[in-house]
Every structure is written in C-alpha cells, then in structure tokens.
Length: 278
Image (tube, rainbow, N blue to C red; front, top):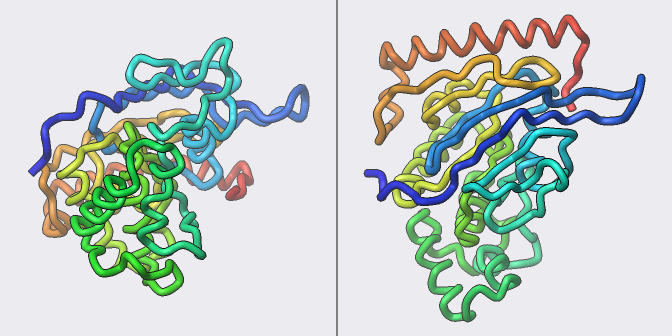
C-alpha cells in the first residue's frame, strides 16, 4: 500500500515557452505549456517523436534554459523571469534512456556516489542506507558487481535506487525502459510501483508506450506535435495498488483507446509536417 502522502514534490509548469535560435531561424520546441503535478503523483507524458517532451524535462532538470514562463517546485521558482535556467540539484534527479552508471565503479559505489559527493552523511550511514534500498529493490548480492556484469533490467533498477539515494522531490524519467524487451519491461513496471508505494516521490515520466503510461500513471498528459503543449489530460482512474491483471480490464482498454486516438492525431500531423525524431 502507498505510504503517507508526501509533503514535497509539487511541480508547476506555468506557460513555458522554449525557442531555439532567433529570427527566421527560430524553432519553437515548447509552446505555452502549463501542467500542474501534485506532490507524489506519477505523471506520464506522451506525444509524437521530436515534439519537445525531452526539451521540457531538460528545462525542469536545469540542463538548459526556457524562453519564457516559469517552473516552480514546492513554491520555489526554479526558472522564470530573471532566471531563465534552473540550477541542477539533488531535488530533481534524471533517470536517462541510455543509462548513466559509472562502469568502473561497483554497484554499491554507484549507488553511494551522490550522497558521498554532497557530503550529506557519514560513509557508514550512506552505505547502510544504500544496502537497505538495494535490498528493497531486490538487488541484495549485487553490491560488489560491476554494471557490465548485470542484465539491462537490473542496471535500470540500480539507476533508480541511485536516484532515490539523493532523496529527490522529483524523479525525471526519459524513456528509461525503451531498450528493454517486453517481459523485462513488465517486471520493471511492477518493481517501480512497489518502490513508489514505499516512497511516493513525484515522477515526471516520458514514454512512447501507451500501455506503460496507463499502467503506471495517475494522469496521462498527451502532448501536441511540435511545438509541444498539452492536447489533453487523461485521469487514469484505476485504483492503486495495481498489478498486470488490470491490462485485461474494460477500463484499461477504454483508456488505451482514448489515448491512442489522441496520440495518433498528433502523430499524423507531425508526419505531414515532416518532423523527424531528435
């Protein structure tokens, strides 16, 4: 069951615009995008390839600036007027599509890396927390392994545990399971939900997989073709906790049909405009 509701992690994206270049060469990536994400919500984001979803995630993380608008976390402006680019911080941790573990470090050292660099606790306390989180994620016994010795699914779990070690307010997922086979992906979905039930951190999750989006999320934001802005927000009213039995339920199939129709409309527009994946 879900833990006590979190007191932090409310994310507000307020009328955000991101334009690359200037004058005739300007390209709009994000167009007056507004999304309110309550603390502890799993917000899934879908849309055509190249529409600007990752651009928005990168702005939240502080990897690049915005042209106008504001992004606010727990009442504090991350970026906006007078501060076009957010400062990267441990309160917002990204789990990347292609992975970012240090291949020369053991799993335990990878998991401990963030808190050690930040000096947030003593070495013994950090290692104890790392081992506890790894055990909860089914990673006990992997501490002295190196990333290359693990399966792709296990590496994904290590990355999520490493992210949680920073005690973030928001986890930012950029298609983290895209490269996994369908069976491994389904196991990873259930593992992520079990982790979230223990520690309901806010999650902003980009995906192209509608089944993944509806299985995991509380809400699904369907983005328009580039420049991206919300086309529709679908409330996923399937109760938690969930398991893969919900995939055959009439409500799940109805939500899939609704989302698929919306995404297809935007994909057809993107195709007609000649937008390419970036």
